[in-house]
Length: 112
Image 1 (cartoon, rainbow, N blue to C red):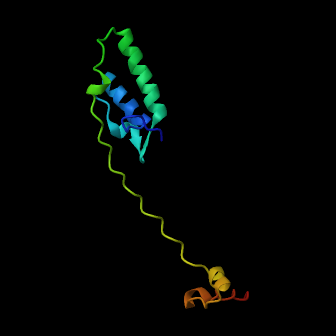
Image 2 (cartoon, rainbow, N blue to C red):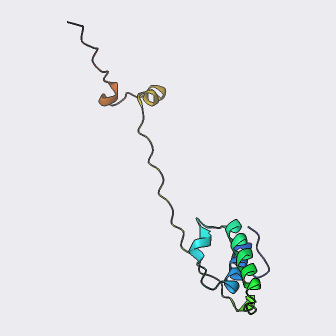
Image 3 (cartoon, rainbow, N blue to C red):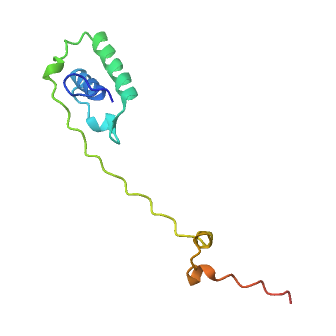
């Protein structure tokens, strides 16, 4: 992740620039799983800038006046549980499998 002279990464700077043009933007829409959605930011910024230009909107506030956004907390996803060992795993390790794995199904009944 590239960091500029002020300690900001490119995504933070681009989001602040987007906020200049569209103050209702929400961080949660552009920052997911600890990463900025750069393509979405680029497209939305270009779209809003062009709409403002077409509407002859006043100049946006300077970038220096836009505060750094508070990034949402990252929630770690719990690890998936490991699959229980199979009879093959026990055979490879040399350990005796538990009784439930060592039982074989009964043979089919002979036809009457």
